[in-house]
Amino acid sequence: MGLLQLVIDYVSAQSVLAIVATLTATYFVISVIAKTAHSEIRLARMPGGRAPGISSFTYPFGFDYLYVTIRSAMTHRTLELWRTMFARLSSHTAEIRIAGCRIVFTAEPENIKALLATQFADYGKGEAFHHAWRDFLGASIFTTDGEPWHASRQLIRPQFVKNRVSDLHVFEGCIQTLFRAIANRGPLDGEHQPVDFADGNGKPVDICDLFFRFTLDAATHFLLGHNVQSLSTPRQEFADAFSEVQRVQSIISRSQSMSHLVPRGSFKRGLEVINRFLERYIHRALHLDELEAKSESPGGYTFLHALAGFTRDPQLLRDQLISVLLAGRDTTASSLSWTLYELARHPEVLAKLRAEILAVVGPTRLPTYDDLKSMKYLQYVMNESLRLYPAVPYNVRLALKDTTLPRGGGPDGLQPVKVLKDTPIGYSTLVMQRREDLYPAPSAAFAPPHVFSPDRWANGWQPRPWHYLPFNGGPRICVGQQFALTEMAYVLARLFQRYDRLENLMGEVDGGSPTLRAEIVLQPGDGVEVAFWEAGTTAHAKDAGHEEQEEGVCMRE
Image 1 (tube, rainbow, N blue to C red):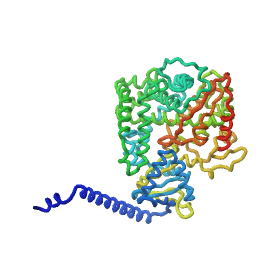
Image 2: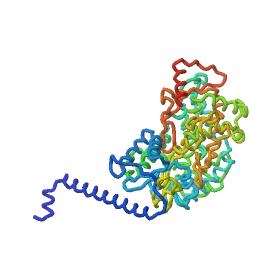
Image 3: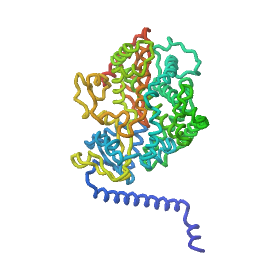
Image 4: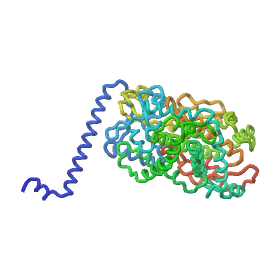
């Protein structure tokens, strides 16, 4: 009997598994130690300092922090995690190692400026980011660097020139359906469903859900020439798939080197729905002749047709459409939702806003692009909403070479932070824009930074450069910024031409402390329950208990 046969006869399957597991774990530990040692030697040779380190003791190799990060994201408490981390270290730049990989976190304006502008060539998305997001966003403007990124930007940017951004008819058709959905207290059951507008006064409606449907309808009309009519369809397969893919993608991106362990069944099914939906429009656009594809006639021109005039690659068209749809739907819907959330809690702000809207366009005239730009208080309301609730609250860049960050290193935190190639840098505009030390002291003319107060802008305050980044900054600044702001302004103007009162129904839901759901964009975690009152109707009196509850909410601010 040979040695091999003896092993087969006397070594159980459980023993073999135990040996394999032990060898795998040993290899992992040795690899992490070797990777850490090699990295530390290289860092020691670089000029500059180190950022304060985040302690990790419960589990080895930083796995406890990885667990806390994912758990915080799933329970919508990421802001508290970042704030606690920075407060304990008395610094707004910190670092940790997870499985040997050094990660730097920052909410320091000078560092964010370096990432996005002054050291733009040193930082990018990186291959790991592209790989993690490849299935969803492909090789699009949001996932690439260098020449591919530049080519994507050059392809997309002409579609957001002023004459396209100022074409407001895209929004008005969807606005009329939005009015009917508000009266219906939710999406319509078919576009021809009869609606009693008077019956909708003072009735609760989740305006967040309706805004996500509205922006999807407007975005698909602009991009594809086809409104998916999600405001008229309670169950919308494409919208549901899009949301689920984003949810899982957010978990994947936070899981770092452990992302391969994330279950992806619903993710893959959602991608199949999205791809099937887009393929038929791409196929149709690619079979148009060049003249028709480039036509700017109202009936023929769409974003997709314009792209098809420059590229015939269906995969490239798909990737760019998905990226612009993500930006065009989710960021604007979230920003509108937060604005309504705050306006419902601040009737004095709504009164000022409505007075300006009526002074400029009256109760019925459709606003023009120039009308919207002339409404200063409307701009202040949007600015303040984006200050408190930036659409993309957390982001990441990868060091493309050995480099530094300007601040946060050394004992005093004033030295540059040394950064090796392939080091991920997480940064948060949400944390930065809520830092009390970056604002003037509170006064009668300047509310505390955590309070929604458009009057701070009306009183002449302007944020310092790189302290306010609702659309990022530098070469990667959002190409659709003006489109998003125009859509927000148009929706707000049309809403408050029609409605003169907005009742806050969120007090019993969140007690005045909103749930910040940060997956890819920052959206209200509990929806936004409000009641609208059309101008000229009589509002129902609130009971005393409800009145006291709202006063308590205001006092907690």
